[in-house]
Length: 225
Image (cartoon, rainbow, N blue to C red; front, side, top):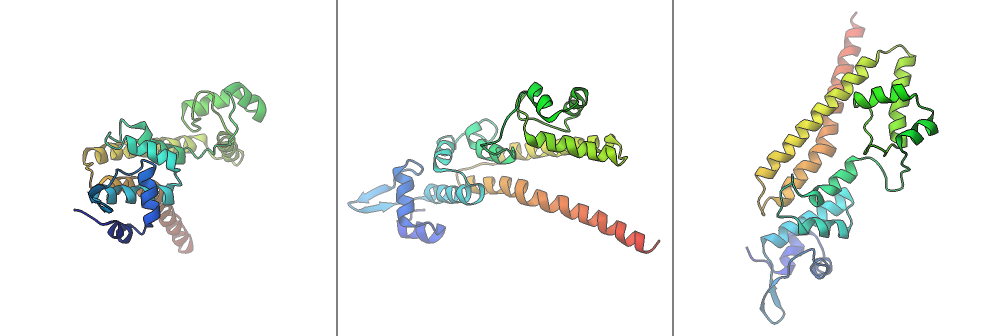
């Protein structure tokens, strides 16, 4: 379908000046020139504008990151690191100014028991981003595990908690692969919205609602005992 730029503005709620800026920056393809000062846009423009808007609004991606991602948009989700990179940065929960430690420095700085640390690493209860990329967030989990132990809660329940989180991660990987198989130029933005909304909205909803349901059941049972 062919569109005037005024129609793109109406369909996306993105100003004309912004759309023209995206074209100048190479984030959108050039419009087809019909005659002098008359240009027509197509469904690809519409889809990409929606994608850019979604990434900037919901993920906080910069123009540079989006531009690199769009240069690889014809690659699959599974093979294009630049397409997945904005998602990875968000999932890592590590800010750009986070302080990193090697394993040895981490042990010394936070006074962590080395044997205990190795056990947590083996069980994937703590998961540093790299072999020598430990952060304060890893230490936060270690403190939590120690708190469980202090009140007499067995470590096994934490281990199982991490195990189920890993299973969930594998399911989300399968989801990514399946989305890849149905990708077309027309559903490009929709697939990314599905992936992000699942990881950052539906995931929280499902987990917290199940926890709420369990706790509510316990409260009701306690009242009638």
